[in-house]
Amino acid sequence: MAMTTDNTTRWTVTVSKETDIALRSFLAQRGMKKGDLSKFIEDAVRWRVFDQTVREVRDKFADLPPDELQAMIDEACASVRTEMFQEPAPRQPDA
Image (cartoon, rainbow, N blue to C red; front, side, top):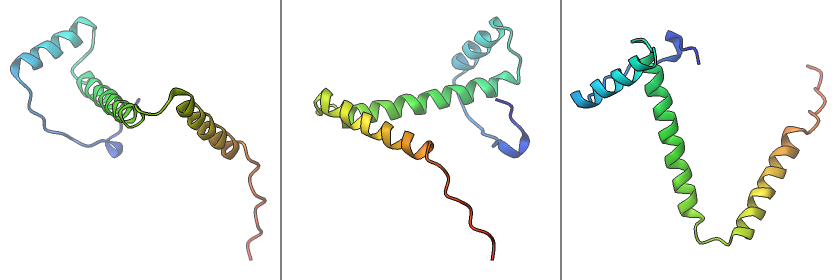
């Protein structure tokens, strides 16, 4: 993902010296440069947010029988597919 200055926000974060050294060593071992630190952090944050979201959803549906949950998922997927592949409404001429 290419980041441009129009689409970025500068963060100031504080981490332990141990974490800093471990991460920079990790990146260096893989041939990554200083600028790759931001890309690594963005990727890590995205994965963490995704992981937390999945955990929350799993917790909310933990008491639901698997067959009922699968039926809900199938219904939602079918609804989205119908919406995505629907013919667009004819465009009305401008008055």
